[in-house]
Amino acid sequence: MSSAAHGNTPAAWTGSSIAFIGFTISGVAMIIAWIWLFWVGLAVVVLGGVVGKAMAMAGMGKQPSPHYYTPEETAARQAVTAGV
Image (cartoon, helix red, strand yellow):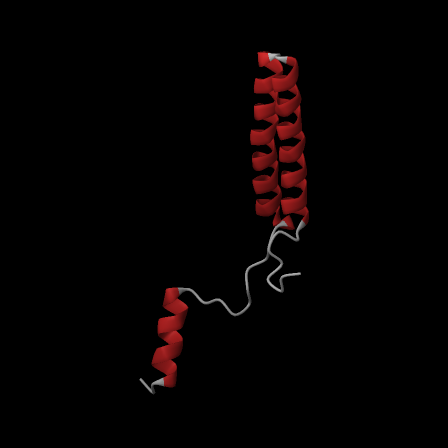
């Protein structure tokens, strides 16, 4: 398992699961030749992306690294360490 928690979050699992269900619906629709069900499946795939992103924005996605600094913070730290 990746130490960076790549894809190992509730948001990622939920979004991927919903998208998988949508792909399955579209696949079945192609076999039975129901075009309306194919488009419903694609709408479910898009819904999976929206739900995953909404959950990530709600804090259930990957958390920012405590070791990451913005460019301004990096410049301020370099100025301090340079003795300016």
